[in-house]
Length: 559
Image 1 (cartoon, one colour):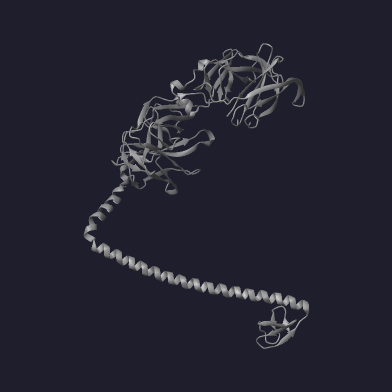
Image 2 (cartoon, rainbow, N blue to C red):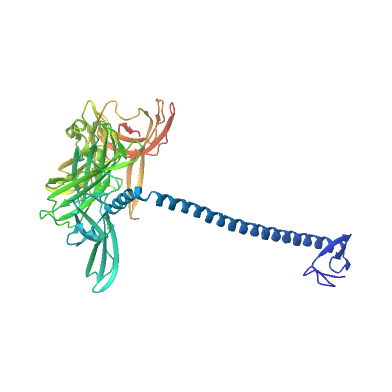
């Protein structure tokens, strides 16, 4: 017998059932033919035959498993059908047996389900207006719609669909939900619906989507801000307010949402915004704040009036929440917003601070400006902000310095970067007018600031100056002019004598002349965290912008 080594079949009968019967000897189990092969061929053939047998065994096992799985699935389906039939029979028996007893309950359940659905005609829509939201090239076209609830029932998450046309051709359709979870009877609410971009919209059709009452709700007292301010900085308008849980029945409140709306003198909506409380829940006596950014449109119109409404929920012992309804929750105010310089950074806590929490801005002083030059001999001025209070730390001091040369204004400089300023401390400031040779007057618009009693929030550090070295540097301007300037290399260390780690240390290193006037400064803000008892070195190259330095002072803050 010969073996076809390509197909591994008997050369006599073509069978693939080969068995090793001796050294280098193979027998066909079909025809009995025997074949002798060389040693290396024998080893290779044995390996191949083992692979073939293994593959055949795997296929046989897989086929058997598939047949068993199919049989079990058929058996499961049959059992499931039988169980379902038994259950259905039992349900039918119970229903038929208790038909009279359950008829009234079923009718009540159906009536309750139908009761939640409210005819859409009850939500009245004012004539829509196309408006631009945002400013300049980023302004986005929107469709403004004001919806009024005349159903006599509270509405849950009412929505509107707008279908846009160019003549008789349908272009697109968009949907939007009113920006309140519940619209009370008699209330109105504005909504902005997206419009197709880059398309010629000649008309639109509005459709009210399915209306329904809230699944569960309770009536309760109106929620109003204990303190509220409408502020405007340039085109930006914000409503900031404080919410206090003054319930006397140990009720936890949560789920605060606020809708603020702006009106012109004709009563038209010219802006609105929607926001949430910073705290998710507040216990009795607790408080939280809300900061709502308001989208403006119709910027030519001044704000003549504004209102807000607060939606909230009662937090149950189980953790569930039940919305509180009040049909007179809208609080309206006549008049416009408080205006602040757009460069001021106004924090929510700063704006809502009580009178007892405020720092008196009269306790802050800007020292007389010192004339100086930068490293290319352009004129600049050095200033220092001083806290003249003897017992209060000013938190996040800030303001805008307006510069004047005679009666002409020459730009502004913003005071920022400090988290606090302690009594007697001096914060250095650069004023760098570009085309101004002298400053005759400065005016400061301070931001609302808070105070803190001593010892205040700063963690104590020990700052030591261990060395100073005066140097001369040069700079080449426009490859044509070279300027020389003076600078001082200041070396020192910062030690943490406390018991906790101090991170994000910021250090201002100031040069002073023999009269104690500021002549240059630099901020060092790359210091690492400092462990208790450890110290870290620092080195700063400080440009000398005024007279020759005679001493070095430092100011630091920690986080």
